[in-house]
Image 1 (cartoon, rainbow, N blue to C red):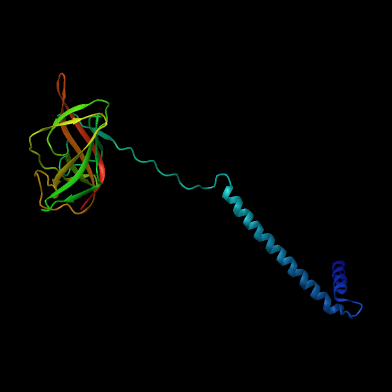
Image 2: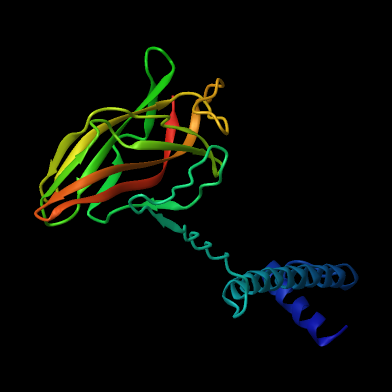
Length: 237
């Protein structure tokens, strides 16, 4: 019997009342050792679980640990600035992924991101807003309708305005003034070399550009200016 066995034996005898109960050493000592092994196992398990928790916490703050990847910066879209009498190159089937800009004194915005077919189903109509962003009044002259529209799908020109032949009208704009314009354009997919195709543009999401030529009456004569904007994501109904 070791000193530890003797110590446990005395503690057990004190707890069980050894003055009244006879003690069988051969039976009691194995029980003491079994209980000691259980206590040792439980303590080891608790220590191990605590170490796992501490390790997990340490991993979360370890220098050099992987962090969620940062969001990629938005791609910078190149801008094409339309100049009066300039070559536009919006040919059917051609690529168009750049933004459009015109005279900085004029800004186009869609009034609603939706284009709807008219009663005949041959035309799509969309509302735009034209704003004089300058601090001066503009005495503009142009056709009475809204801007020319270019319809793009996956970076390729697939449709748009096919023609406009109307007498002009005055478009006076005070500083900061916004006016509404409605544009009509073909509801059919364009074909290279032709003004209009026979395949309807399927309903869905497209990118739409808009531009309109004006002349600006000044004290010294008339200057040509262009309002332009896009692309905007538009739902064709």
